[in-house]
Length: 203
Image 1: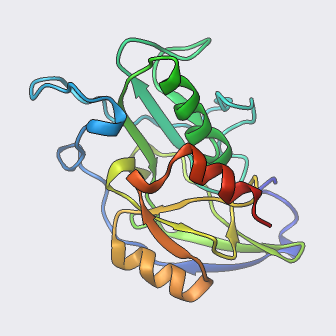
Image 2 (image 1 turned 180 degrees about the horizontal axis):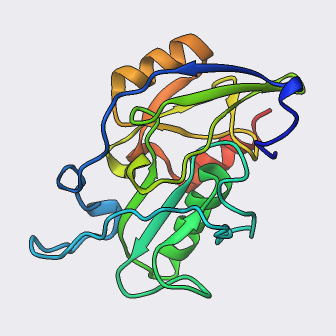
């Protein structure tokens, strides 16, 4: 779904998010389920800007040209095909999480995962063809640690590939979003391969 379609067919609503960039000091490495064995002096890479025509490592679509949250995964001893870390994605439900689960089975260990933080951006909701979509953001300071997020699922708001997980660093923001647009909230540790498969299969 292209975010730059004819504006005459779109109805946009803007919501003011929390102000300020995400400081590097506020970001912590993902432990336990994401990689484990992280030492206190191991550097945690910072998120990068995903603009500039980068193609999703799970499907090849250009990041920033489609609605919804983006993500990036830094791996400890591996890197994605064709470029250095991180692996990058224009969707979480059909890109980042499936890729992460598949590569975890291969023994790849993630150092940190970053996803769009909708508590830290001024996002827009766009109505198009009877569906409502959430804006995409690619700047480095729009990302937060995936393990720290509260995710809104089963809402009436979609990403570019349809059903999404919408991350908020503020649990209150996530609760408010779910109350307004439907759905429920969950933590990172609740997102499993089995849960995601069932979530995407539900109509």
